[in-house]
Length: 409
Ligand code: AMP
Image (cartoon, rainbow, N blue to C red; front, top):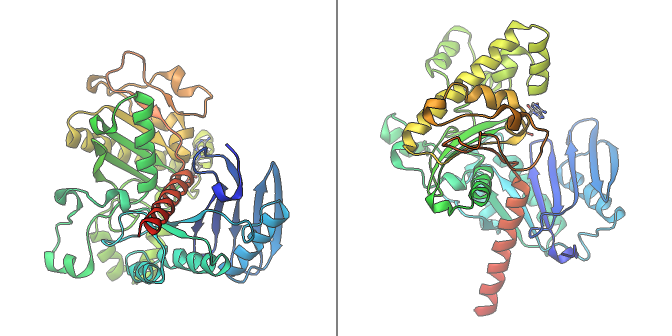
Protein backbone atom coordinates (compact mmCIF):
# COMPACT_ATOMS: atom_id res chain seq x y z
CA UNK A 1 0.00 0.00 0.00
CA UNK A 2 1.40 3.39 -0.90
CA UNK A 3 1.97 6.10 1.64
CA UNK A 4 0.75 8.98 -0.43
CA UNK A 5 0.01 11.90 1.85
CA UNK A 6 -3.70 11.73 1.18
CA UNK A 7 -3.86 8.20 2.63
CA UNK A 8 -2.40 9.33 5.90
CA UNK A 9 -3.89 10.37 9.20
CA UNK A 10 -2.12 12.53 11.76
CA UNK A 11 -2.95 11.39 15.29
CA UNK A 12 -2.45 13.89 18.08
CA UNK A 13 -2.51 13.29 21.82
CA UNK A 14 -2.11 16.61 23.64
CA UNK A 15 -1.22 16.77 27.30
CA UNK A 16 -0.94 19.92 29.38
CA UNK A 17 2.73 20.41 28.49
CA UNK A 18 3.28 17.74 25.84
CA UNK A 19 2.08 16.54 22.44
CA UNK A 20 2.50 12.97 21.24
CA UNK A 21 1.89 12.46 17.53
CA UNK A 22 2.02 9.90 14.75
CA UNK A 23 1.51 10.14 11.02
CA UNK A 24 0.28 6.77 9.83
CA UNK A 25 -1.58 4.83 7.24
CA UNK A 26 -4.89 3.78 8.81
CA UNK A 27 -5.27 0.77 6.57
CA UNK A 28 -1.85 -0.85 6.83
CA UNK A 29 -0.87 0.64 10.20
CA UNK A 30 2.47 1.72 8.74
CA UNK A 31 3.85 4.62 10.80
CA UNK A 32 5.48 7.23 8.57
CA UNK A 33 6.64 9.50 11.37
CA UNK A 34 6.13 9.92 15.07
CA UNK A 35 7.34 12.13 17.84
CA UNK A 36 6.96 13.84 21.14
CA UNK A 37 6.95 17.51 22.11
CA UNK A 38 7.80 17.98 25.78
CA UNK A 39 7.94 20.76 28.36
CA UNK A 40 5.74 23.21 26.44
CA UNK A 41 5.66 26.56 28.24
CA UNK A 42 8.78 25.79 30.27
CA UNK A 43 12.20 27.37 29.92
CA UNK A 44 13.61 24.53 27.90
CA UNK A 45 11.36 22.47 25.66
CA UNK A 46 12.29 19.48 23.52
CA UNK A 47 11.04 17.69 20.43
CA UNK A 48 12.05 14.25 19.23
CA UNK A 49 10.82 13.52 15.71
CA UNK A 50 11.32 10.10 14.11
CA UNK A 51 10.88 9.61 10.36
CA UNK A 52 12.38 7.24 7.82
CA UNK A 53 14.67 5.60 10.36
CA UNK A 54 16.10 9.00 11.42
CA UNK A 55 15.57 10.93 14.63
CA UNK A 56 15.61 14.73 14.50
CA UNK A 57 15.78 16.64 17.77
CA UNK A 58 14.97 20.19 18.80
CA UNK A 59 15.91 21.84 22.09
CA UNK A 60 14.76 25.30 23.15
CA UNK A 61 11.80 27.15 24.58
CA UNK A 62 8.40 26.20 23.12
CA UNK A 63 5.96 28.90 24.15
CA UNK A 64 2.68 27.05 23.57
CA UNK A 65 1.05 24.12 21.78
CA UNK A 66 0.71 26.03 18.51
CA UNK A 67 4.41 26.91 18.51
CA UNK A 68 5.22 23.26 19.28
CA UNK A 69 3.05 22.01 16.43
CA UNK A 70 4.52 24.58 14.04
CA UNK A 71 8.01 23.26 14.87
CA UNK A 72 6.76 19.69 14.36
CA UNK A 73 5.31 20.62 10.96
CA UNK A 74 8.68 22.18 10.02
CA UNK A 75 10.34 18.90 11.00
CA UNK A 76 7.81 16.99 8.90
CA UNK A 77 8.64 19.25 5.93
CA UNK A 78 12.39 18.76 6.50
CA UNK A 79 11.92 14.98 6.50
CA UNK A 80 9.84 14.96 3.31
CA UNK A 81 6.22 15.44 4.46
CA UNK A 82 4.72 18.84 3.88
CA UNK A 83 1.54 18.46 5.93
CA UNK A 84 0.26 21.89 5.00
CA UNK A 85 0.87 21.44 1.27
CA UNK A 86 0.03 17.94 0.03
CA UNK A 87 -1.88 17.58 3.25
CA UNK A 88 -3.12 14.64 5.22
CA UNK A 89 -6.50 13.01 4.87
CA UNK A 90 -7.56 13.73 8.45
CA UNK A 91 -6.35 14.55 11.92
CA UNK A 92 -7.49 12.34 14.79
CA UNK A 93 -7.34 13.79 18.29
CA UNK A 94 -7.42 11.71 21.43
CA UNK A 95 -9.86 13.40 23.79
CA UNK A 96 -10.04 12.06 27.31
CA UNK A 97 -13.57 12.90 28.46
CA UNK A 98 -16.66 12.82 26.27
CA UNK A 99 -19.11 13.04 29.18
CA UNK A 100 -22.67 12.00 28.34
CA UNK A 101 -22.54 13.86 25.03
CA UNK A 102 -19.87 12.19 22.94
CA UNK A 103 -19.79 8.44 22.47
CA UNK A 104 -18.80 8.22 18.82
CA UNK A 105 -15.76 9.56 17.01
CA UNK A 106 -16.94 13.05 16.11
CA UNK A 107 -16.09 15.47 13.29
CA UNK A 108 -14.77 18.58 14.98
CA UNK A 109 -16.62 21.88 14.53
CA UNK A 110 -16.53 25.06 16.63
CA UNK A 111 -19.52 23.74 18.59
CA UNK A 112 -17.77 20.41 19.27
CA UNK A 113 -14.66 22.22 20.54
CA UNK A 114 -16.85 24.34 22.84
CA UNK A 115 -18.62 21.23 24.17
CA UNK A 116 -15.30 19.42 24.82
CA UNK A 117 -14.13 22.52 26.64
CA UNK A 118 -17.33 22.58 28.73
CA UNK A 119 -16.58 19.00 29.83
CA UNK A 120 -13.38 20.24 31.49
CA UNK A 121 -15.12 20.21 34.87
CA UNK A 122 -15.14 16.40 34.59
CA UNK A 123 -11.49 16.17 33.44
CA UNK A 124 -9.69 19.33 34.55
CA UNK A 125 -6.23 17.92 33.85
CA UNK A 126 -6.99 16.53 30.42
CA UNK A 127 -9.78 18.19 28.43
CA UNK A 128 -8.30 21.72 28.49
CA UNK A 129 -5.05 20.33 27.08
CA UNK A 130 -6.98 18.38 24.42
CA UNK A 131 -8.86 21.55 23.45
CA UNK A 132 -5.61 23.53 23.16
CA UNK A 133 -4.17 20.85 20.88
CA UNK A 134 -7.31 20.83 18.72
CA UNK A 135 -7.45 24.62 18.41
CA UNK A 136 -3.78 24.85 17.48
CA UNK A 137 -4.03 22.11 14.87
CA UNK A 138 -7.14 23.66 13.33
CA UNK A 139 -5.32 26.97 12.99
CA UNK A 140 -2.29 25.36 11.39
CA UNK A 141 -4.21 22.96 9.11
CA UNK A 142 -7.44 24.86 8.36
CA UNK A 143 -8.42 22.75 5.35
CA UNK A 144 -8.00 19.33 6.96
CA UNK A 145 -10.98 17.60 8.62
CA UNK A 146 -10.35 16.80 12.26
CA UNK A 147 -12.00 14.15 14.38
CA UNK A 148 -12.21 13.75 18.15
CA UNK A 149 -11.93 10.20 19.47
CA UNK A 150 -13.00 9.88 23.09
CA UNK A 151 -11.36 7.71 25.73
CA UNK A 152 -14.71 7.30 27.45
CA UNK A 153 -16.74 6.38 24.35
CA UNK A 154 -16.47 2.58 24.46
CA UNK A 155 -17.92 2.53 27.97
CA UNK A 156 -20.86 4.79 27.23
CA UNK A 157 -23.39 1.96 27.39
CA UNK A 158 -22.31 0.44 30.72
CA UNK A 159 -25.28 -1.12 32.52
CA UNK A 160 -26.92 1.17 35.08
CA UNK A 161 -25.92 -1.08 37.99
CA UNK A 162 -22.25 -0.82 36.96
CA UNK A 163 -22.12 2.87 36.19
CA UNK A 164 -24.14 4.23 39.12
CA UNK A 165 -22.45 5.43 42.30
CA UNK A 166 -24.55 4.87 45.41
CA UNK A 167 -24.67 8.49 46.50
CA UNK A 168 -27.55 11.01 46.67
CA UNK A 169 -29.14 10.60 43.25
CA UNK A 170 -29.97 14.31 42.91
CA UNK A 171 -26.38 15.31 43.63
CA UNK A 172 -25.12 12.74 41.14
CA UNK A 173 -27.56 13.97 38.49
CA UNK A 174 -26.72 17.63 39.05
CA UNK A 175 -22.99 17.04 38.69
CA UNK A 176 -22.81 14.35 36.01
CA UNK A 177 -21.47 11.82 38.51
CA UNK A 178 -21.35 8.28 37.11
CA UNK A 179 -18.74 5.79 36.05
CA UNK A 180 -17.52 6.83 32.59
CA UNK A 181 -14.45 4.60 32.21
CA UNK A 182 -11.27 5.43 30.28
CA UNK A 183 -8.71 3.75 27.99
CA UNK A 184 -11.79 2.81 25.95
CA UNK A 185 -9.98 3.08 22.62
CA UNK A 186 -7.43 0.55 23.86
CA UNK A 187 -9.96 -1.87 25.39
CA UNK A 188 -12.06 -1.80 22.21
CA UNK A 189 -9.06 -2.28 19.93
CA UNK A 190 -7.66 -5.14 22.01
CA UNK A 191 -11.07 -6.84 22.27
CA UNK A 192 -11.25 -6.81 18.47
CA UNK A 193 -7.74 -8.23 18.17
CA UNK A 194 -8.61 -11.02 20.63
CA UNK A 195 -11.64 -12.02 18.55
CA UNK A 196 -9.39 -12.17 15.47
CA UNK A 197 -6.77 -14.23 17.30
CA UNK A 198 -9.38 -16.71 18.56
CA UNK A 199 -11.10 -16.69 15.16
CA UNK A 200 -14.41 -16.02 16.91
CA UNK A 201 -17.22 -13.54 16.38
CA UNK A 202 -16.76 -10.75 18.99
CA UNK A 203 -20.50 -10.98 19.68
CA UNK A 204 -19.96 -14.51 21.07
CA UNK A 205 -17.07 -13.67 23.37
CA UNK A 206 -16.89 -12.77 27.04
CA UNK A 207 -13.58 -11.11 27.77
CA UNK A 208 -11.57 -9.65 30.61
CA UNK A 209 -8.89 -7.18 29.52
CA UNK A 210 -6.15 -5.73 31.70
CA UNK A 211 -4.65 -2.54 30.24
CA UNK A 212 -1.59 -2.17 32.48
CA UNK A 213 0.51 0.85 31.56
CA UNK A 214 1.44 3.91 33.53
CA UNK A 215 -2.31 4.32 33.88
CA UNK A 216 -4.08 0.99 34.38
CA UNK A 217 -7.62 -0.28 33.97
CA UNK A 218 -9.51 -3.51 33.50
CA UNK A 219 -12.72 -4.20 31.63
CA UNK A 220 -15.32 -6.93 31.51
CA UNK A 221 -16.81 -7.26 28.03
CA UNK A 222 -19.84 -9.37 27.14
CA UNK A 223 -20.45 -10.04 23.47
CA UNK A 224 -18.46 -6.98 22.39
CA UNK A 225 -20.12 -4.63 24.89
CA UNK A 226 -18.41 -3.59 28.10
CA UNK A 227 -20.37 -4.43 31.23
CA UNK A 228 -17.88 -3.04 33.74
CA UNK A 229 -14.58 -1.24 33.99
CA UNK A 230 -12.34 -0.14 36.82
CA UNK A 231 -11.88 3.58 36.10
CA UNK A 232 -14.76 5.80 37.07
CA UNK A 233 -15.86 9.42 36.92
CA UNK A 234 -12.14 10.12 36.52
CA UNK A 235 -9.12 7.95 35.71
CA UNK A 236 -8.33 7.70 39.44
CA UNK A 237 -10.52 4.74 40.34
CA UNK A 238 -9.71 1.06 40.23
CA UNK A 239 -6.31 -0.55 39.80
CA UNK A 240 -3.04 0.62 41.34
CA UNK A 241 -1.10 2.68 38.76
CA UNK A 242 2.26 4.41 38.37
CA UNK A 243 1.32 7.51 40.36
CA UNK A 244 -2.38 6.88 41.13
CA UNK A 245 -3.56 4.54 43.85
CA UNK A 246 -6.90 3.49 42.38
CA UNK A 247 -9.63 2.52 44.85
CA UNK A 248 -9.52 3.97 48.32
CA UNK A 249 -11.89 4.70 51.16
CA UNK A 250 -13.33 8.18 50.41
CA UNK A 251 -13.21 8.76 54.16
CA UNK A 252 -9.43 9.06 53.80
CA UNK A 253 -9.96 12.31 51.91
CA UNK A 254 -12.25 13.73 54.59
CA UNK A 255 -9.73 12.73 57.23
CA UNK A 256 -6.89 14.45 55.35
CA UNK A 257 -8.96 17.58 54.74
CA UNK A 258 -9.66 17.85 58.44
CA UNK A 259 -6.42 16.56 59.97
CA UNK A 260 -3.77 17.56 57.43
CA UNK A 261 -5.48 20.70 56.13
CA UNK A 262 -5.32 19.44 52.57
CA UNK A 263 -7.41 21.45 50.10
CA UNK A 264 -8.59 20.33 46.64
CA UNK A 265 -5.20 21.06 45.06
CA UNK A 266 -3.36 19.17 47.78
CA UNK A 267 -5.65 16.16 47.37
CA UNK A 268 -5.31 16.37 43.60
CA UNK A 269 -1.52 16.29 43.93
CA UNK A 270 -1.68 13.38 46.36
CA UNK A 271 -4.07 11.29 44.27
CA UNK A 272 -2.73 12.03 40.78
CA UNK A 273 1.00 12.36 41.36
CA UNK A 274 2.12 10.94 44.70
CA UNK A 275 0.16 7.73 45.07
CA UNK A 276 0.22 4.27 43.50
CA UNK A 277 3.55 2.54 42.92
CA UNK A 278 5.33 5.89 43.31
CA UNK A 279 3.64 6.72 46.60
CA UNK A 280 4.57 3.36 48.09
CA UNK A 281 8.05 2.85 46.67
CA UNK A 282 9.34 6.22 45.41
CA UNK A 283 9.46 5.13 41.74
CA UNK A 284 6.65 5.04 39.23
CA UNK A 285 8.32 3.09 36.45
CA UNK A 286 7.68 -0.64 36.69
CA UNK A 287 11.16 -1.59 35.51
CA UNK A 288 12.66 0.49 38.30
CA UNK A 289 10.27 -1.09 40.76
CA UNK A 290 11.44 -4.53 39.72
CA UNK A 291 15.08 -3.45 40.11
CA UNK A 292 14.33 -2.17 43.62
CA UNK A 293 12.64 -5.45 44.51
CA UNK A 294 15.73 -7.30 43.31
CA UNK A 295 17.88 -5.20 45.66
CA UNK A 296 15.67 -6.26 48.58
CA UNK A 297 13.59 -3.08 49.01
CA UNK A 298 10.67 -3.87 51.29
CA UNK A 299 8.65 -0.83 50.22
CA UNK A 300 9.02 -1.86 46.56
CA UNK A 301 7.93 -5.40 47.44
CA UNK A 302 4.87 -4.05 49.24
CA UNK A 303 4.00 -1.78 46.30
CA UNK A 304 4.16 -4.80 43.99
CA UNK A 305 2.05 -6.94 46.32
CA UNK A 306 -0.62 -4.23 46.61
CA UNK A 307 -0.62 -3.89 42.81
CA UNK A 308 -1.14 -7.64 42.29
CA UNK A 309 -3.70 -7.90 45.09
CA UNK A 310 -5.86 -5.24 43.39
CA UNK A 311 -5.57 -6.93 39.99
CA UNK A 312 -6.74 -10.21 41.45
CA UNK A 313 -9.63 -8.58 43.26
CA UNK A 314 -10.98 -7.23 39.97
CA UNK A 315 -10.27 -10.47 38.16
CA UNK A 316 -12.46 -12.25 40.70
CA UNK A 317 -15.17 -9.63 40.40
CA UNK A 318 -15.24 -9.80 36.61
CA UNK A 319 -15.21 -13.61 36.52
CA UNK A 320 -18.37 -13.53 38.59
CA UNK A 321 -19.94 -10.67 36.63
CA UNK A 322 -19.39 -12.44 33.33
CA UNK A 323 -20.12 -15.97 34.56
CA UNK A 324 -18.41 -17.47 31.53
CA UNK A 325 -15.09 -16.06 30.35
CA UNK A 326 -13.61 -16.87 26.94
CA UNK A 327 -10.34 -14.91 27.16
CA UNK A 328 -8.21 -12.99 29.63
CA UNK A 329 -5.86 -10.53 27.96
CA UNK A 330 -2.96 -8.35 29.08
CA UNK A 331 -1.94 -5.21 27.21
CA UNK A 332 0.04 -1.91 27.50
CA UNK A 333 3.57 -1.36 28.87
CA UNK A 334 3.45 -3.58 31.95
CA UNK A 335 0.85 -6.02 30.60
CA UNK A 336 2.83 -6.64 27.40
CA UNK A 337 6.28 -6.75 28.98
CA UNK A 338 6.13 -8.16 32.49
CA UNK A 339 5.81 -11.96 32.61
CA UNK A 340 6.09 -11.72 36.40
CA UNK A 341 2.97 -9.56 36.71
CA UNK A 342 1.01 -11.85 34.39
CA UNK A 343 2.09 -14.98 36.27
CA UNK A 344 1.38 -13.50 39.71
CA UNK A 345 -1.97 -12.01 38.65
CA UNK A 346 -3.24 -15.46 37.61
CA UNK A 347 -1.35 -17.74 40.01
CA UNK A 348 -3.23 -20.63 41.63
CA UNK A 349 -6.41 -20.30 39.57
CA UNK A 350 -6.27 -23.68 37.80
CA UNK A 351 -9.56 -24.69 39.39
CA UNK A 352 -11.17 -21.77 37.49
CA UNK A 353 -9.66 -23.03 34.21
CA UNK A 354 -7.04 -20.26 34.28
CA UNK A 355 -3.34 -21.01 33.94
CA UNK A 356 -0.18 -19.43 32.55
CA UNK A 357 2.39 -21.56 30.72
CA UNK A 358 5.83 -20.50 32.05
CA UNK A 359 7.68 -21.02 28.74
CA UNK A 360 5.05 -19.21 26.67
CA UNK A 361 4.78 -16.44 29.24
CA UNK A 362 8.51 -15.71 29.25
CA UNK A 363 9.14 -16.20 25.51
CA UNK A 364 10.80 -13.14 23.98
CA UNK A 365 7.99 -12.33 21.60
CA UNK A 366 6.38 -8.98 20.96
CA UNK A 367 3.26 -9.72 18.92
CA UNK A 368 -0.18 -10.96 19.97
CA UNK A 369 0.22 -14.39 21.56
CA UNK A 370 -1.17 -17.13 23.78
CA UNK A 371 0.45 -17.58 27.18
CA UNK A 372 -1.87 -20.25 28.60
CA UNK A 373 -1.09 -23.97 28.18
CA UNK A 374 -2.71 -25.57 25.12
CA UNK A 375 -5.17 -27.60 27.27
CA UNK A 376 -6.20 -24.67 29.46
CA UNK A 377 -9.95 -23.91 29.50
CA UNK A 378 -9.68 -20.11 29.33
CA UNK A 379 -7.17 -18.70 26.82
CA UNK A 380 -4.81 -16.18 28.40
CA UNK A 381 -3.36 -13.77 25.84
CA UNK A 382 -0.93 -10.90 25.46
CA UNK A 383 -2.05 -8.42 22.81
CA UNK A 384 -0.12 -5.22 22.06
CA UNK A 385 -2.42 -2.24 22.13
CA UNK A 386 -2.29 0.40 19.41
CA UNK A 387 -4.43 3.39 20.34
CA UNK A 388 -2.93 5.53 17.57
CA UNK A 389 -3.98 3.06 14.90
CA UNK A 390 -7.47 2.80 16.38
CA UNK A 391 -7.78 6.61 16.44
CA UNK A 392 -6.45 6.89 12.88
CA UNK A 393 -8.97 4.33 11.63
CA UNK A 394 -11.84 6.01 13.47
CA UNK A 395 -10.86 9.43 12.11
CA UNK A 396 -10.51 8.06 8.59
CA UNK A 397 -13.93 6.39 8.75
CA UNK A 398 -15.67 9.52 10.05
CA UNK A 399 -14.14 11.65 7.31
CA UNK A 400 -14.97 9.10 4.60
CA UNK A 401 -18.60 8.84 5.72
CA UNK A 402 -18.98 12.63 6.05
CA UNK A 403 -17.66 12.98 2.49
CA UNK A 404 -20.18 10.38 1.31
CA UNK A 405 -22.98 12.29 3.03
CA UNK A 406 -21.87 15.51 1.36
CA UNK A 407 -21.86 13.80 -2.01
CA UNK A 408 -25.37 12.41 -1.48
CA UNK A 409 -26.93 15.66 -0.20
P1 AMP B 1 2.56 2.61 28.94
O1 AMP B 1 1.82 3.64 29.76
O2 AMP B 1 1.65 1.62 28.28
O3 AMP B 1 3.58 3.19 28.02
O4 AMP B 1 3.40 1.73 30.01
C1 AMP B 1 4.41 2.29 30.78
C2 AMP B 1 4.80 1.29 31.86
O5 AMP B 1 5.25 0.07 31.25
C3 AMP B 1 5.97 1.79 32.73
O6 AMP B 1 5.68 1.54 34.10
C4 AMP B 1 7.11 0.90 32.28
O7 AMP B 1 8.03 0.68 33.31
C5 AMP B 1 6.39 -0.38 31.94
N1 AMP B 1 7.26 -1.23 31.13
C6 AMP B 1 7.74 -0.97 29.91
N2 AMP B 1 8.58 -1.98 29.52
C7 AMP B 1 8.62 -2.86 30.55
C8 AMP B 1 9.30 -4.11 30.78
N3 AMP B 1 10.11 -4.63 29.87
N4 AMP B 1 9.07 -4.76 31.96
C9 AMP B 1 8.25 -4.23 32.88
N5 AMP B 1 7.59 -3.07 32.73
C10 AMP B 1 7.77 -2.39 31.58
